[in-house]
Length: 267
Image 1: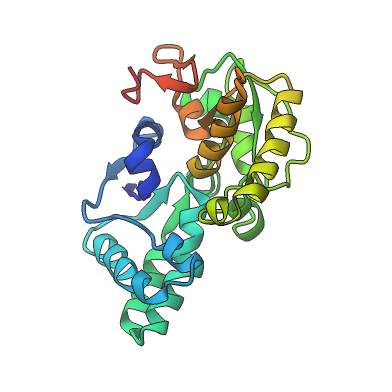
Image 2: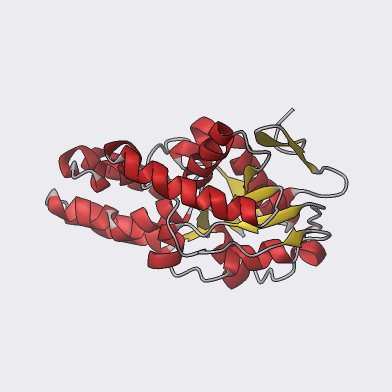
């Protein structure tokens, strides 16, 4: 297949190794990955804060960027941003009276998948060790982000893939359904509440004895990782795509407050 990568703005700006890991996984399966260069933000942070008029040109840009290229499906290593395409972009275009862009946004959203959903539902990947050569000899727990769990209904797709990585020791996270407290602008508009929620999440993560906490949205992992770091914890966070991309030949190296991958340019 020809797959367009929607890297998302936070991955592109702060965690490019997650985008690289996504590409590595898909190319390992024999697919061609392209990167529409005009992409920027999905507009989620604008919409969630009520800035519909400011969100409209961002929506138009995304639709244009992904409508100009020929591909079978698009993928993003973020349930949060994929949910925004489906649940917000057409609404914003219609709010602006632009039905053509709304319909184009629906078409783009209809072919854009969160990574685990693409791997399992479309590409038939059910065993990361056998089908991807994934290898990660560490004790790992998993945080389920709110958008993927509550709106996209990913279920256990992300954690199921991590569980099948060779030599991984997977431990369940208590109170898995509880938010980490990030919520985009919620984390600074309601900083005290957000901080208390993050503290609860960190306590649960540390109770598992895991070396790392993984998940499917770098925004949540950034929030959790920051809380862990401020506490002086030895636990760090890493996106599940990086674990799937890790192999015996090019392992994901766990070092300090961040995990570094030789395959993703971490060194």
